Amino acid sequence: MNLRLQLVVAAVIILAMIYITNKIRKRQVELKYALIWYALGIVYLLFDLIPPLQIGICRLLGITVPINMLIFLAIGLILLIIFQQTIIVSKQTKMITRLAQEIGILNEEIKEQERKL
Amino acid sequence: MNDDLEKRLVIIPAYNEEGAILGTVDSIRKKAPSFDVIVINDCSSDSTRELLEKNGIRHINLPMNLGIGGAVQTGYIYAAKKGYDVAVQMDGDGQHDPAYLDKMLDAMKKQKADMVIGSRFIENEGFQSTKLRRFGIGFFTKWIKMLTHKTITDPTSGMRMANKKVIEVFAENYPKDYPEPETVVSILKQGYTITEIPVKMLERTAGESSISMKKSVYYMIKVSMACLISSWTAGLTGGKRK
Image (cartoon, each protein chain N blue to C red):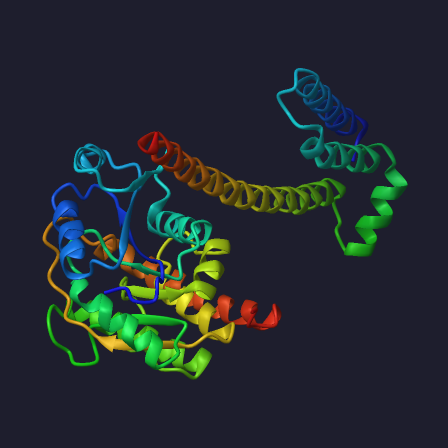
């Protein structure tokens, strides 16, 4: 990877991390869920800025062009993050359902009490 | 009628059932007076809610549309909370005849079953659904037989009665959509027993089936998978809890 590409990749990552940090600061993103994005950024930055690491891993995986390795890595990590979000969505669906059910039952119980009075 | 002070509840999930809900509740009060009735109004956009309020029918209004699974489960949570001994779910569209409720109760007692299903396909009388649907139901019967070694002739029937133990299982866990076949597998795998009695179903008086042609392929795949996974899950948790 030439220096120019390296710098472009580093700049994009750093901008993205500043953006994420800002979102957390404004309480629009939960730090808990942002951690994995930070992890992704740092891993990426390390690969980008340490050429021997790039070359070593590329050789290990049989990849000839280092940028391909970055793309491969990115897709893998993104799939992981998306699946994590599927888990979160499933959990929240269950929680929302339960909340709606409890609210419905409570409302009926309140009405029942009023009828008795 | 109710000689042993047992508390019995009919759960009616209702989504836009203004055309049939009053008739359904009325015929339960006439034909099965020992049962309390609770209608779960699943955030209907028609006048279902107003009708229920005006006629003093006990009902729960869900604040958002949860779908059939979430609505029926609300009924089971309510039944568990209020200490009901028997809960039976029935469709609000007039397909199920409440005259069978006492027979279901009888079958539950005599055969010591934890759950009783009203089946269209024991005597093959009454409204039999379309040919394609019958084929789908037949497939699930075979699929459930493979998974649980038990024959349930009408696993998609929405007319089912649960005892206290099964009420608690359902209150804790119930599938979101197309719940019927999946719950059959899960209940059997947890070591509970299911029995069926023959019923005649009527053609719905109002409303339409929740499963359209377009959705039927999705339905078959989703429900088959759900049955399979649920048959493994119950095995993992070790089964029957007392």
